[in-house]
Length: 249
Image (cartoon, rainbow, N blue to C red; front, side, top):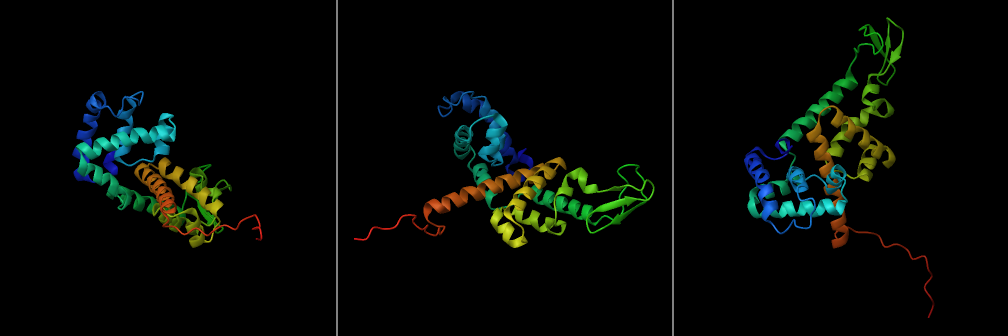
């Protein structure tokens, strides 16, 4: 799992740390209350790629708080025994890993070819005697006279404005907020949320797992930073008007 996310020079340290986790569980006082403690072995690889607590919680049927407590214990071990590896995990917030960058380019190339195709075998009879019709990716088969949309197998036929899909993917991978994406592309936030859900599923179905994981990490970090900015006063929030009239003295 970590091979696609962490820098190559940290792979041996990651392997060494994962092999050390069982002995740390047996000797450390940090995990005495984290039952079952063996779950830390399964969570450790996810900590190495900075997977969000919400995803860890869903995978192991934990509460987000329980997932965070286990993740924090593993991070303490990393900081103590593998400080360089720990710093590399923290640096994932600033840089896009090489494998993720490669998958991002491959995914966008796949999407570009799909949208630009002019020849597509018929979904019904398999004939190559097809012709593209309309501005959407619809085809008519000259052999069986039926129409079909190749986007349907990827569930993309339900999404509009296909000319915006590539810039949308770029903004998505930058971790931009839904409101920012909405403003830049001229679509409403409900559409942004729908597209995000569909494209994330397509990335996973097409085998771009590192890319899908990276997006979810980036998204979670965006929410966390916004929360920190608000609570440290770095983000300006307009003062809300009071619903009550002030009493005259």
